[in-house]
Image 1 (cartoon, helix red, strand yellow):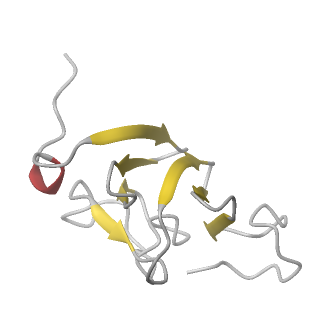
Image 2: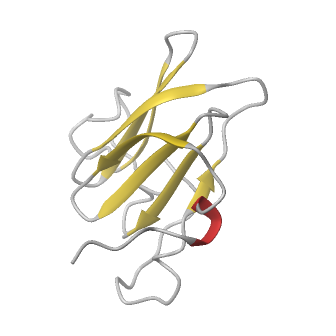
Amino acid sequence: RPQVVLGVLADKHICHISAGGSHSLAVCDAGHVWAFGSNLKGQLGNGNVTFADDEPGREIPVQVQFAPGITIVSCSGGGLHSLALSSDAHVFAWGCNSKGQCGVKDEHDIL
């Protein structure tokens, strides 16, 4: 049966969710993005990668850090990358960029 995602999300008012290949994203009404699941290519947006999919704690949502003043209104999870849309209509991307899916010419992953 489906389970309620608790932990740090328990007291948040979630207004948007998205699922990637093996990670999930949630946006709360305060404009913050929370990510959990696999982080093999940095798709959680926490500045690093996790080399083992069985690493403890991957089920615990982590807050994606944006520059001060950025308010996120929507997000989407790709296979190994993530996207977010800000209230001022800017698109942010992070994670695997091997095919340019993060919208930058450099094919290195964006952490």
